[in-house]
Each structure stands twice: as C-alpha cells, then as structure tokens.
Amino acid sequence: MDILLHNRNAWNAQVAKGNRWTVPVTPEEIARARAGDWQVVLTPNTPVPQAWFGPLQDCDLLCLASGGGQQAPIFAAAGARVTSFDNSDAQLAMDRLVADRDGLELRTVQGDMADLSELPDASFNLIFHPVSNLFAPNIVPVWKECYRVLRPGGRLLVGFMNPAYFLFDHFSIEKGGPLEVRYPQPYSDIEQFDELRRRGDVNDNTPMEFGHTLTDQIGAQLAAGFILTDLFEDDWDSSITPLNEYMKWFIATLARKPPV
Image 1: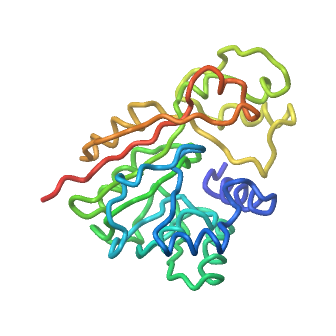
Image 2: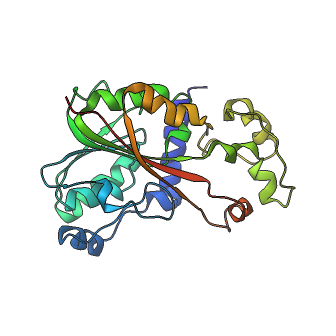
C-alpha cells in the first residue's frame, strides 16, 4: 500500500466530513490574533504556553503537517511569515481559504513530512508540528529534516501520542469491548488494516496510523541534535475513549536547535 497516498486521500475525505481538525478558524479569531490575542494547541485541549513561541514578528514559521485552516492562519495574523506544509491538498485548501478570506500572506506546500527537500537549509525560526506524526510510518527522518531547515537557535514545537495508547483495540472498546492490552509496540496499522476492514472498523477514508516509541519521539529529536527544554502532557475527551479516565495520552515538547 502507498501509505502517503492513502493518508492524503483519507484526510481529503476527512475535510469533506468536517473533521474537527479541518474546520477553519473564524474571521473573529483572525481579528483577535491581529490584535495580539491568540492561542493554539499542539494537542487536543491544552493551549501551548506563549513563552514557547517567542516573538512572532519577523519570524519565519513552518507549520508542519498542520493544515486545516487553523494554526497557520492564526500565526500569519499574529505577524509571522508562514509556510504550511501538509500531505493533504484539501487541508492546505482550508489554510488558503482563510488566507484569501481574511487577507493573510501564507504559503502552502504539499508534501511528505519526512521529506522537506523543497525547503532550503536554515530557512525557519520556528516549526509547529501538532499531533500528526502518527500518520507517518517512520519519524526519525522528520526530526533530521526539522533540524536541517531550522536556523541555529530555532525552536521545534511538537505534539504526539503516548505510545501506550496503541496497546489497545480502540474500535473494540468503542463497541463495549474490554479494556485489555492487545497489540505489541511499536504499533502499525499496516499489520491490522485488513482485519479492521473485515470487521467494518476502517475503510479507504480512514487514515492509517502508527504508534512510535518514546525513543523515536524524544530520543530521535535529541539524536538529531536538538536540546529538549520543556514538555507537558494533555488529556483528550472521554466521549472519544474511556481510556481518558486513566491517564493523559498526549505529550507536547519544546526543543531548540543549538546556536552556532
């Protein structure tokens, strides 16, 4: 299976369905951001601390796998020079919709988060990468590419799933099944997709997911050369998974590329 193509088509379908992460921000939110009143999330619920960003004026900012008409337009309205890079053309169209509607300067580029070869070395001050690397089978190249395109002293803001989440059969749990460990880690939908399709739990419009170890999520950032400076955990919504009552399933990290 061509995973990149499958997930592009699946996220295009999610835009058509009005998935939460594909609904553009309002003109009122853009107006507030222009006035300096804004917040965004790397994870479902907790706003990212403002101190993680630094000044956005004159900031070259890459929204990585972050399309959907949400974060990128907010950053552009707050004064950053924004490039939105995403696999889904429909998600990028949501960013363009807001930019055209509200008169924002915003560049969109379609591509694979693990291959930023279209972007020059040391071209960004900040990368904003919300929970999306669960749609990539290998994330080690993502951190290497992020390090390459960041300037010395630049910041990498990342949100990701705790890999323990992928121990469970969530489709079964949603149907009232038991909370029991089922899948070895690291998790890959490639190994389960045919079974899940036979059960009617997934189809061609379902993005394919991968659970990555903390070694790959955090250790590989460090191995790429980043310095981890802060992190927080975030919860979800109990209506989505009853596991939300047991622990926080998301992690956000702030890392920096060392100055020269």
